[in-house]
Length: 182
Image 1 (cartoon, helix red, strand yellow):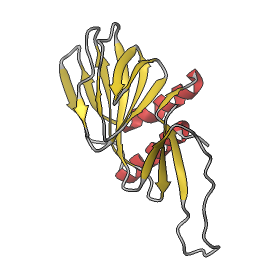
Image 2 (spheres, one colour; image 1 turned 30 degrees about the vertical axis):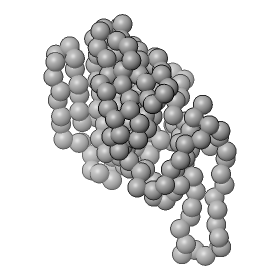
Image 3 (cartoon, one colour; image 1 turned 60 degrees about the horizontal axis):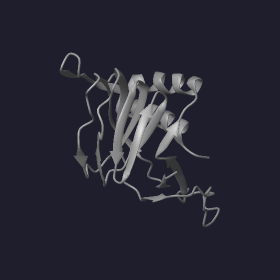
Image 4 (spheres, one colour; image 1 turned 90 degrees about the horizontal axis):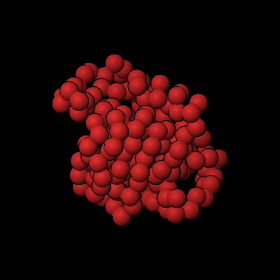
């Protein structure tokens, strides 16, 4: 298992979210060094995707966080109707990847109430959610979606976000709370 560890503050911030509906025979496009994290959650169906040197066969209730500094692509066509949600986010702060999870307690240099509280947000790059957990996750995710890609209709629809940037950031944090490792 690989993790991404964000030194906070600043916390990662939300950019945009969407959903995609793929037909059997469709594949995820190839993207390189896009400079943003890409979180993908499979509602139903499957998705074959490679990120860097690691290949995944994602199924219902599974999610992956793709790295901003690598190449990712669909390495195989889907064989069934597939719906997945995706979300782009960025971190203005420091982050690093690790193979091991270490619980990092908050580091306070002093009890000075005027100093930033430093901590670490740890997210697994892959996670399978339980059905009940994924239902709530999908419900929150759906509120952030402003772009829909439908391969059956061969169209992409972009709408205005229903929420303010601050409300979107709050919903994004709620999603991260489902993913983070404590």
